[in-house]
Image (tube, rainbow, N blue to C red; front, top):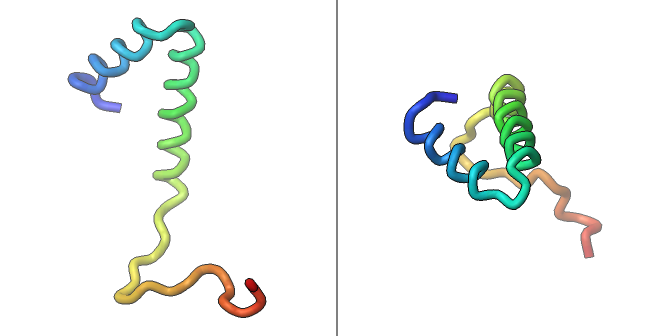
Length: 59
């Protein structure tokens, strides 16, 4: 995570929280989750949308 405006916003959230320690831990996990998602990679781009759920048997 880059420092700068992000750090200011992070400090505001932590400092203003009812439980700053819990908020800091939540932010730590959020950054970790974001990194894991980035490393997992995105789904391939397609020219047209395709349904990921089956259409038949839903109703």
